[in-house]
Amino acid sequence: MKKSVAILFALIVSQFQAQQGPYYQQAAKYKMDIDVNTEKFTYQGSQTLTYTNNSPDELNVVYFHLYWNAFKPNSMMDQRVAGQGKNGDSRLQKDGISRLASIPKNEEGAQNIHWIKQNGKTLKFEIQETVMKVYLAEPVKPNSTTTFTMDWDAVIPQQIRRSGRNNREGVDMTMTQWYPKIAEYDYDGWATFDYIGREFHAPFADFDVNITISKDYVIGAGGILENPAEVKGYDTNVKIKTGKDNKSTWRWTAKNMLDFAWAADKDYVVKSFDVPQGPKVFFVYQDNDKTKVWEQAQPYVTKYFQLMNSRFGKYVYPTYAFIQGGDGGMEYGMCTMILGEAKNIEGLMGLMAHEGAHSWYQQMLATNEPMRPWMDEGFTSYAEGYVMNQLFPPKQPLPNPFVNSVNAYRNFIKKGIEEPAVWLGDHHDNGTSYTYASYVKGELYLVQLGYIMGEQNLAETLKQYYDQWVLKHPSDRDFLHIAQKVSGMDLKWFHHYWINTTKTIDYGIKDVKYDAKSTTVTLVNNGQVPMPVDFSVVTKDNKVVTYQIPMNMTHTWKEKDIYGEFKTMPYWPWTQKEYSITVPYTKAQLAALGIDISQRIADVNLDDNVVEIK
Image 1 (cartoon, helix red, strand yellow):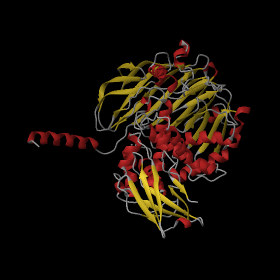
Image 2: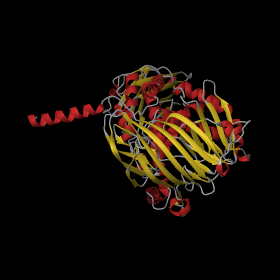
Image 3: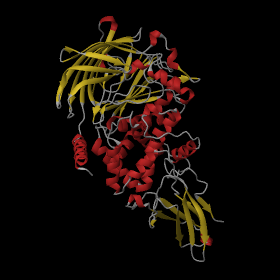
């Protein structure tokens, strides 16, 4: 290497290393005053935002999200939905045509910024679709704080996706991603993805929100209601306090959350109960014939939080609210918006379990969802599957709690439309492919890790992940670091194959030869993703003996697993197509031979995984 090139290379490396630095995260405090016009579905808003720059960088601009600007004809969301047609999100289109294209003018979403100031100085800003770029009057230096004030008015959009007025169950207002929200800034820069309909990201913040609305309305929100005795629905001894125009003011606070969401309706009822060791849970919904199942949910939700706290880390906030609203289920700080009508308790709890689990993997472990949706949706789906298996044990025991997800993935692969999980959330071309990349492959990421390194190691990894990163913004690299440390294994190869590619696992039994005192089995790797193999023999007297065949890339083998004891064999090099194993059983002694009787491995072809011996 020439000296000049070597010096340049050294400078680049030193700059990269310097940029790593210690971990930091930004901080924000919102104080808002909101005045709602329930007849016109509009509101007037003002806020003071205290923003602390904990980064090592000087900031000359800041960015805010204006999500409601997406809900209008010819918005980027409308264009994306139109371009995807029937391959897109079914909630955003009808018969392949974007629903946003036909929103009436008076029901278009809007957040009209009147002005924004920094420490009293009026700032220049420009609106770029759902992002507002603000040019600062003075830089925000590292480890310093600045104050932004702003006034705006907003039109609550027609309810199409998550937010909006008059959802299909008749809830008047679902107020989510509803205020100008400052974007996250971290080592990757500003998280300023346009809102196309998928996920969100933000810095942790404290909230102090006054909502003035007609006294006939009840509000459900993610936060602490500071004046329950002055408003409708929360206190049996209520003396509703009203001001001008016959309105009441609701005062809500919350600390260290990503966002503040709320919903309002005249027909809401509020029911609450305490989970031992927390949190206090609120049900806010329309109590009618279609929502009667909610009356059965309290003991299930209580056990749900206890299971989640025990397995995945303690829920840190004091309250949680399940609120009827939105267009399906969507998680927010200390609450979720869900459709309230349900046919049975298992269906309702499935929705509550998934959205509630987002409090762990979207709120408390706040990964960047637009960049890595699989880390939130997938880990949340894993927690949902784990808890639902205990809340509603199947009549016939399953090989593992996630076998249905493995089967669903296996069937999906046959369609030939898989897209890599590494893709940005809004940039998937097919809605179903996004679902499998983010929800299913993200869930199976953990299932496969449990298979590779043992379920005890996976449980310890999840525990340490929570302990080290609660109320922070971890990445996949942070999770993988913990998994490798706990297991002692090199797992980078698995992460690469499973997240960055659409290559598949396909092992099989190629040949069986019986001898006088033993049986020799030849296994074959027909897939593109190498994996360790748990190979089992079942004897005629129903004895199961499992042989672990490690793969050399992990360099360390799993020592135990809750799915039975095993004998460890010499490793299988990942470059080697076939592997032979000789077991000390004759044909007369054997009933079956099989790969992974726990059915955790996401093998796409099971036809050659088991041999029955007659």
